[in-house]
Length: 206
Image (cartoon, rainbow, N blue to C red; front, top):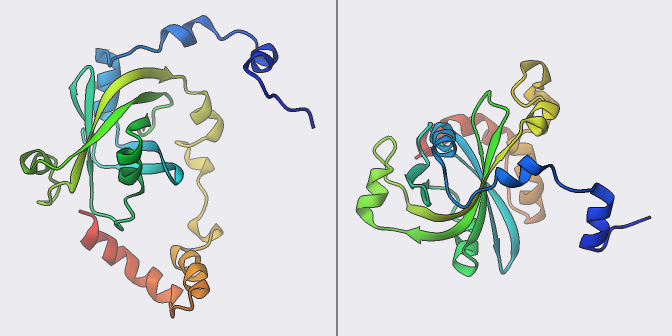
């Protein structure tokens, strides 16, 4: 099969970029980009470390990502499973990328920059939810910010109820977990897991 293996071949195949796609990228957060981030309830954090690439979902009520200034944003790291994939990667390679989503909005904001992991107690306390401080705070020095048009969200129908599926069409969390438990010869009940998980999630959200 024909394959593209060079930048020259890539550019010849696709042609020149649309001009406004170039000038929408800026090395800081202007007031519009800041407002978008402050309304975002969900962000995908991409990192790259010695074990490869990782993308991690992060979510909280709007405002959970703090715009410190036009060159810096901070987001809390909440309690989880302690795999710490993103944090391990940041220690190995502090370059990160983020995509911010706002419910029922087609556009997204892409941000890339350099991250550090802060554990100052006063700072972690300032990100507290339900009385629980953040485990740490990821502080990102913004290097590039880009306003992405809504084509991808529109194509996916992400915010359109008619595109939603019934959860029963997919394996349950317990069923997916049991596959790996079985591989480890660990006794595991998918039914009990699914039955208890809603209560467990509420108790361990923060």
